[in-house]
Image (cartoon, rainbow, N blue to C red):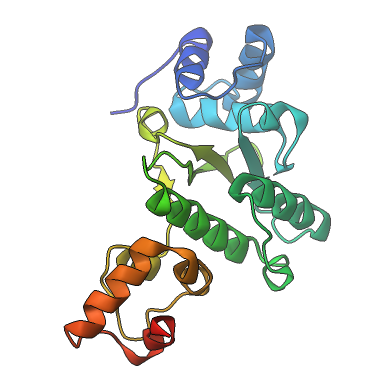
Length: 221
């Protein structure tokens, strides 16, 4: 069942998730009225209102303060938007992203998500932030959008009551756990493994047990 909200309740819920932290309550309420166009206010409409304030063409000053960015379907192929997302993701993952990925939003998200996950995997305390996203829909112009967030803890996002995606390629996640699949070597794992003691130990263990696919064997040298 859809939970109906008041603007102040919706804003409080977003703030508990680390969103809308610098947004004025009156501005948010006005955005909610515009987005819902007389319909009841629920979590999805509140998210759409938030996106309209953040801006839907990549990182903005409003979204940067919350460690998020939003891209809608109209902006997803715009070279200027992609360049801004590329640079923001580089800051988020604290490493360069190959130029070859900079012209495709899905490729950028996949790479950044993998690298965030692998950085957490390699950290002693497992506290490195990971990449999450929430997909939304603006009913006023029938356009989809995605909000991307860098978070150490994704639970506050899940508590919003909308679908949340945790970004890591299944093959990357498996390899990081010591499960090496045939044709499962991702570019991100290829970059990560040589400098990761945990991964090198797992690779040697799999090789000793005779279960390491050929594409992973160069890491043993």
